[in-house]
Amino acid sequence: MEEKRDPTVVLITGMSGAGRTEAMHTFEDLGYFCIDNLPPSLLISLVTLAGLNSDGKRKLAVVCDIRAMEFFSALTDELAHIRDAGISVAVLYLDSADDVLLRRYKTSRRRHPLSGEGMTVTEGIYRERKLLAGVRELADYVLDTSAIEPRELRRSIRRLFDYNNEQSKMEVNVQSFGFKYGPELEADLVMDVRFLPNPYWNEQLRTKTGLDDEVRRFVLGKPEAEHFLQAWKAMLEVLMPGYLAEGKNSLMICVGCTGGQHRSVVLAEATAQILRQSGYQVAVSHRDLPLAEVI
Image (cartoon, rainbow, N blue to C red):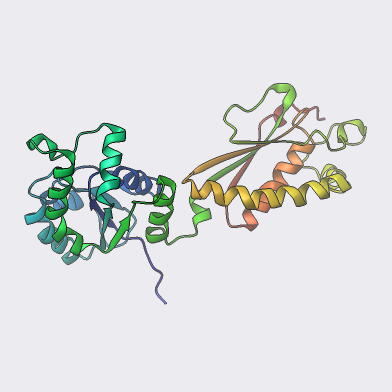
């Protein structure tokens, strides 16, 4: 079976206030080059300028909406031109109930794009819906955002347009460090493993590091470490999908011990192994290892 690919071009449209900006940010996170408020008549020119082709290596997401008044007459022809060029294109239409849109406008105090024509927000919503009725019929996907939060919208878009393993989209960095040299300020998640027996007090291990087999066996051979890893793995199995659902694209997990030489190094490597087994792409670094007392 041929592998399913993300569309090379995604046209984001729909009702004002239904979540187009949030959608655009999600496509940015998925690796799309994004442009807001592009007149549809410029679509094929932009595709040509960007050097897009059918291989899908470059991807483009464009927001076209009611602000471009020539939208309706040009859209169908432009989509046909793109498909004739052999480029995959999908139309995502975002919708929401009128009362929800009205409430969002009142909450944000933003002006509806049609209200400048002497219309109230309610009248603007009504007219916009009529004008977009034909565009909605062209959509490959319609998402109703009336009852969902932004994170659920992001999750829905990822389900529709991210055909790769979700875990591979998150950049995970695991770093060991020593508390005596200060905390890691960029950490998203910090685990303190100073409760584990310290190899430093073993004279044969003092000048070695957590990258040495003797230290690794010492640390992981303790019952405390075994129990910790079981609980740590269970915790990561809860946390990581939650970070993905929130649309987080990079995550730094820091594991600390006293000097950043023994225990934290071993457990940082073990953490990376746990995450890799779950499909995450992980980079490991050891911040304070250059300061270690080694010979």
